[in-house]
Length: 273
Image (cartoon, rainbow, N blue to C red; front, side):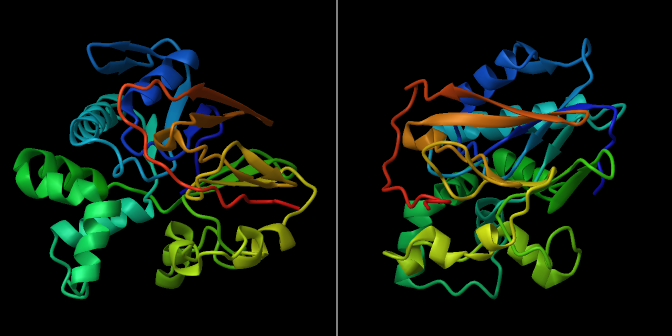
């Protein structure tokens, strides 16, 4: 989907139930929030979430996150679209669980993965109202977005990094590649730059940027025109955003606010040359 070029875009990395950090980042970037409602009436800013707004956080924070996003998605999009959400692999997997996807084989290992990585599924199975809101949002998720300002400046947004031959394409294989890249958990010990070498191999020295999340890094990772903005909020680090304003690109972040327990991980760093 092509984005209107007359808006400024606040593009936010993987939230994973970090609702307090999400609100703080929005406020830091010029939005007002009154009783859970985002007021964007005084600016031309639009919000984009890069996917994976669920899972890993506490059940209450996940509930608060879904409620906040659902309420504001419809509030901000009443007259024109000012709130966009990309599909992440976590939204996709939770959808498969709660919709009882017949192709999803339920094994003891799968149930353990569900408990460890996709805890939103159990929450939605117990809360039918929240489940309906998630399903409603899911039907409105985009796979890719593109801000095509000029022949010299553009930004393509996906949840996961992918090879350029799949980027902004609308076939089934391309969609899958833009939602989830090669599994780190199934390739433990493999450097990320070796697991997905196409990211740095296809990077170019121009201003046609590809911004993605998905990879949970200790900071914003940039190499030429390839940029990862998943800065591991739920891991106790920070929640970051890219700001697109005409032909300018900048970045901003807020630290983890310690209003829930963070989870842990060992970083596999991207662009670790």
